[in-house]
Image (tube, rainbow, N blue to C red; front, side):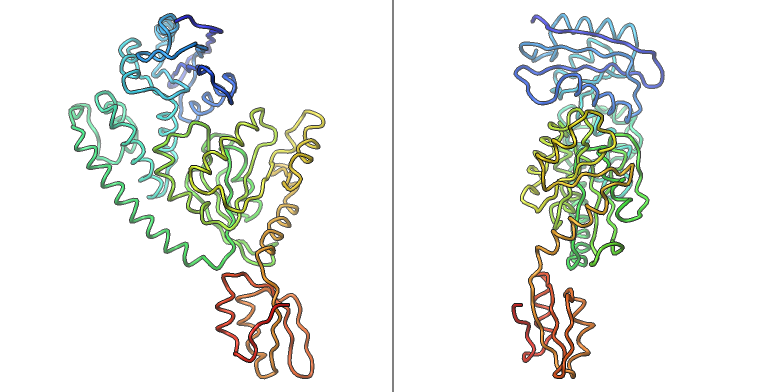
Length: 433
C-alpha cells in the first residue's frame, strides 16, 4: 500500500514514553487528523504517558494484518527502536489480531484509543459503582485479546476486578473471564437498584444534569451554581464519578444539579454500555444543560459527538438547554455574535470570569415554570392552616385575603397535582386559573 501525507515528529523522552499513531481513515469525515491527534496527546498525558514521537498516515485502505501499510509499519519500527517507548498508542481501535501482529514487530506494548480511555477511567474511578463499571468494560475489552492482555492488565493498579493477576496466570481460560464478567454484571445490577431507590426519594425535586464533552467546564459550572468543591483541572476526564447537589440559593425552588462524566469522540462501546447506569442521572433529568467549549477549534464535531452519544444513551428526547462556556477565551472577532445569532435560545457564559451565571439561572427557572400549571384555590378561614402544607406541593404566586377566607394563585408541577388534590377538601378543590 502506498502511504500519503506521512510525517513523524519527536520530542525529549521522560516518564512512560509513548509513540502516538494517527490515521486519517479512508473516506473519513469529522475530526481532522491534527485535532484528533491533539486530543490523543491529551489522553496519553492524562494516562501518565509522555509522547516522544508522533507518526501519521492517510492510507487508501486499511491493512487487515497491521492496520498500517508495510512502509509505514517499517518507519514506525525505526521510531520504536530509536525511542524505546513503553507503548505505541493508536488513535483508532485495533482488532486483536492487529494488536498481536504489531506487538511482535515492535516488541513493545501496542494499545488503541479504547484501551487508553479505559486506563484513564480505571485511574480516576473512586466510587464502588464507577470501579465496577470500569472493571466490567476492561474485562469485555480483554476477553478477545486474552492471549496477550493478561500481562498488561496485571500491571494496572487495582487490577480488572480480580485479585493480583500474576504473570504466570496467562493461561487463564475464557470461562474464568466470562465468570468474572457475570459477577460484575450482577454487582452492577444490585448497585443500580440502590441508585433507583435513591432517585425515587428525590423525584419531587426538579432535576438538572450537566452533560457535554470532556473538559468543557462542567465541574467549574457545577461549583458556581452550587458552591460545591468538585475537582477542576484542565485535563481530560479529571472527574469521573457523578456529583449531585441540592441547590436552593438563588432559585425560587430547590433543584438537584448533577455533574455527569464527560463524553468524548470514539468512546469505547463497552464503556458506554457499562456507564449507562451512571448516566441515568442524565436520562431521568427534567432538564439537560448541554455544555460546550465555545473556544475549542473542533467545537462543531464535539457537539456532533456529544449528540451521538446522548442518543446512544437514550437521552436525546430530554428537555435540553444549550450552554456555551469559555466566552472569555474566544479571540476571533465576530465569533461570539455569530454564534448568538445561530443559537438564539442558548446561554453564553464564562465560568472563569464569572459572567453569564445569572442568565443561566434565569433560563433554568423559565424552563421549570413552563412545566407548571396555573391553579386557583379558595380556602375558608378554617382551612387557612393548610397554607404551609400547600407550599410543599406548589408555588404560591399570590395570596388574596378577604372576608370569606383567602384566594391562592398557584403554579403546580404535574407530579404534585395528585398530592395537592388529596390534601385539599373537596369543597376547596383547585380550579384552573
